[in-house]
Length: 140
Image (cartoon, rainbow, N blue to C red; front, side, top):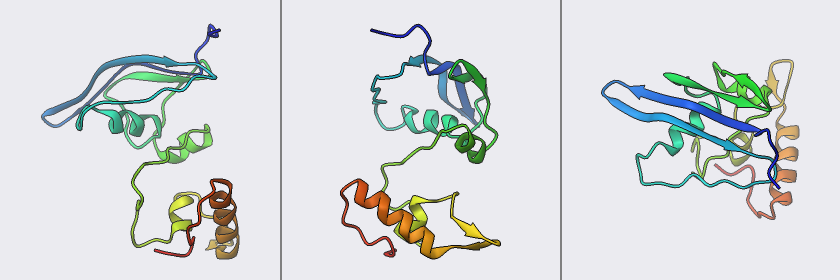
C-alpha cells in the first residue's frame, strides 16, 4: 500500500551547463519501502540528478523535497547533515587515498584537526565486514 506522502520528491528539476541541457523538467516521487532504479543510456542525466540530490550541483530550476520539506543543498555537507549520502559505483573515487579514506570521504574522523587514523580504519573495517567484503581498508 502506497503512503500518501512521498519521502523524496523531485519537482521540475532542470540542469543546464554551457551549451547543454542535461536535465529538463524532471519530476518523480519515491515512497518509503520502495526501491527505485535510475536507468538510461550514457549521458541521460542519471549522475547529474544524483549530484543535485547530494549537493554537488544546484539545479538551474526546480526543487526537491525530503520528508515533505523543500530542500536546497548548497554543498555536500548540507546534504549529509540532512541524511543524504551517495555511494557511487566507481571502485576508486580518489585513487591516491586509501579504501578507508574513500569510504569516509568528507567525513574523516578527527581529533584536534588531525585525522584519527585508528578510528578511521576501525570504522571502515566494521563497514566492510558488515557488507561481507574482504578488502584491505589501508590499500590505495
